[in-house]
Amino acid sequence: MAARWYVTTPTVLVAVLALLTGCGSGGGDGGPRSPGGTTSAVSPPPGGGDDTVEEDIEAAVRATDGYWSEHWTELFTGEYRSPRVSGAYDGAASDVPLCGEERLPDNNAVYCPAGDYVAWDMDLMRQGHRMGDAWVYLVISHEWGHAIQSRLHEELVSLAGELQADCLAGAALFGAARDGTLRIEEGDTRELAQALAALADETPWTDTADHGDASERIASFSQGAESGVRACLPDAVR
Image 1 (cartoon, rainbow, N blue to C red):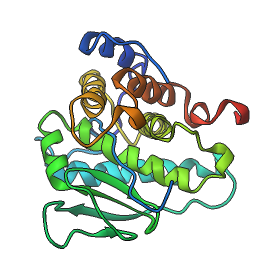
Image 2 (cartoon, one colour):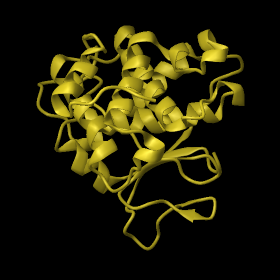
Image 3 (tube, rainbow, N blue to C red):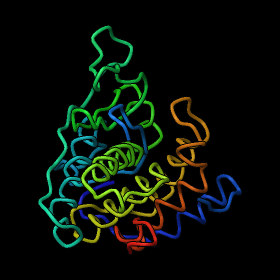
């Protein structure tokens, strides 16, 4: 991903999913809530070159928070508050940060309601970044989606909370692209689909029982990307 993304049709994600998996589409407490994956984002450094994982993390935070800050009052009442960015941690270390009384999980990324912060194990980010920078954007925008849920009235929060967070991630990333602060290219769309499929099906840190399978995750992300934040809300309040 790179700054000022070119928006490609979000429904391409579903077509890419068919190539990757052959699937169709489906359907809070004080402890940590975990992850989602994505593509490349905001402005590349002068002179070009591939961004480091740290640069992509910084860009993903800036693009995601920038979208919610810019559009919150169009969507919801009250004032937008950014979650705190606790950032990188080492889940295998002895001094792992706490969320309430729980240690943050190894090889994962979380939103912690108790501390209102987002954080990520750098091993997870580095591993995913090797597949493509979209991973970093997806993980961060998904966890930010959980932070958004914590700021909403309960009637606006879906029972399928993880899939709603995927939807909010799609809305934020493609919304940032429409705003001109993120550039999404064709290769990024494929990376996003691959990251969502990997997070659903191939990793030890997610459970399809709560996060959804690959087809459900891609369908939810695509819904937000194509139709915006309101499409992520429960049917009764849209």
